[in-house]
Image (cartoon, rainbow, N blue to C red):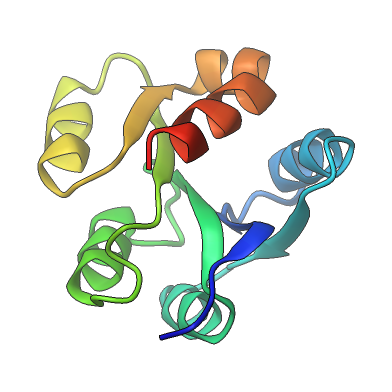
Length: 127
C-alpha cells in the first residue's frame, strides 16, 4: 500500500478561478496541491500519490462527484482518506447522499470559501 503523502491534497474542482483560490490558500499553509479535472484524473492521481485529503465540489458540472466518491471509497487503499466536500447550501439531497457515500465533512460553498484552512485541518484530524 502506498504511504499517505502527509501534506498533499487532491482537489477535484474544474473551475480555474475557484481552484486557484483554494490552491493559494492551502499552499500558504504548506500543503502541496494536486488538481483533478476529470473522473479518470481522480482515480489515477489518487492511486498514484495517495493524498492526505480530498476536496470535492459536489456541484461541478464537468465532474460526477458521486461517481468520484464511489470510486474513492471502493479502493481499500483510499477508503480512509478524509474527504472535504462542498455544495450549494439548499441542496439537502446532495448533502445527504454525500454523507451516505462516506464524505468526512460536507459544507456549503460559502462556508468552504470562508473557512477553508480550518476545514481542511479539521477533516485531517478526524482520520
